[in-house]
Image 1 (cartoon, rainbow, N blue to C red):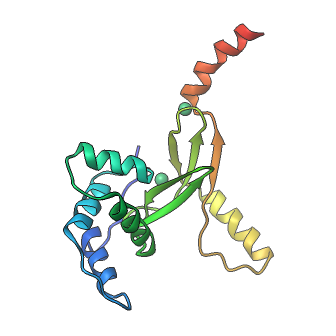
Image 2 (cartoon, helix red, strand yellow):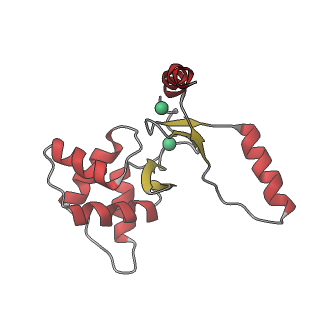
Length: 161
Ligand SMILES: [Zn+2]
Ligand SMILES: [Zn+2]
């Protein structure tokens, strides 16, 4: 269930076009990049580069593998996406037009449940303050089993015992 969107003044496409144009060596917003940005911001999800390549293929969109990897890196740099490291996997999440949040990640089904906690924010602020650390953000990943996977696992465990 996605969190409520945050109002933004520009579309992701316009923001990315502006980012490319404002680089020291301005770059053109190519058709392949537009296809990718539209696809990624069509709906909220967490995905890795290989999943995105598969999804683009399934949607009959022609975006080369090299373009996918290069554009994802630029979208992170532009503040449109954020990167979340999950052990051996790197997933991408919307950052632009989406509220700050953290994740509960299921080790069994890989589902990512989003949550927001004011108490957690306050606690982190207190911790950073104790170190005179000026925090600009954080990425918290809680690993474990989601309710559905834990329920599925429970009877199996009983049988082994
Ligand atoms: Zn699960
Ligand atoms: Zn998320």
